[in-house]
Length: 411
Image (cartoon, rainbow, N blue to C red; front, side):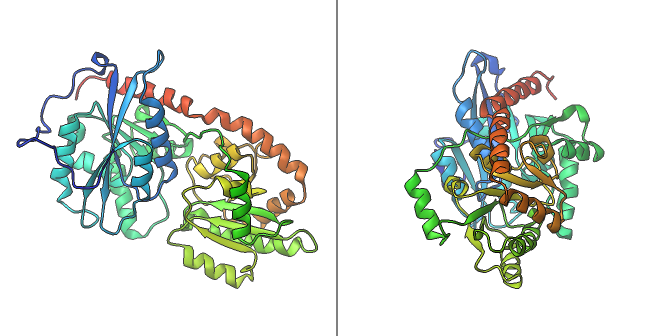
């Protein structure tokens, strides 16, 4: 259910105070009530995992209690609606709090009202602003708090200051869920209690292929020759994702792959580096080779036209694009950053290379381009490996975390 207005409690002339007594123990009803504070415009990997978890955890089983997950999101006039629409289709109840700008103080009473109305057992904060509000407003003193940490992107000085505030905020969470072991070590170095840090990779469903007619139409739409070998890169176009390295590597690979089947690189995504990437494509003479597909809500057909998926990132946590490609059975070249080596093993389930090294990236791309047998071997092993990241495993781990946090004495 989607509310497209600022949150209000229908029929209540005197909204419940946030100082009201928290709900009785969840065991009384068999349902854990979770309120997730989300700042999302597009459907990112963490948002996908949240929606997937909410869908499968709504029903109780002999092994699991049910989890009632309600989402609160902040929206500005310029914000897109992709996340809202996807959450609505997933059956999530979404409460929208309207804001005029980044730290609009008018959101504070709205946030207090939505929390008081839902009276959750646990509040999950998914991003920097939500972490900050939880601690600044003292909400963590009244409610159990789980914070999700996805790492820090390369930013300007202003955002570096935000990151410092984030580290201050996270120290007071009952648990901090991060997505890879290197991030856990960073959090510990920043002063987060190691006993409160939990490493939990994103989850992925088994790949659901699009109809072959749709795949054929996509290839035709993109103007890809029937005999071309296709590379794909899926992700936000931001500096830490390494797309400039990929363009440079593609130029090297193209030069070494002459008199062979034509190559095409399809870049799926949008973001602040789009213009810089387009300029680099022109500089390297790849305008006829690289196809910018923009943001796509449905990526299955793109994986189905691909022979190789490339993840050239300088920084990653638990990359959803890697899990998607492995589940789709596309041979992968990825950099050894963040949680990538925890998911994929070099020369077994992917080819792994150093970050910020276009020449090494190009060499691994060429190795895969020249050997269909290698692509098939990596693909088969990756499909098996990715089964370890299924939604049911994620549900088990998160439910156990909820139980552990709820068993702690009240603050």
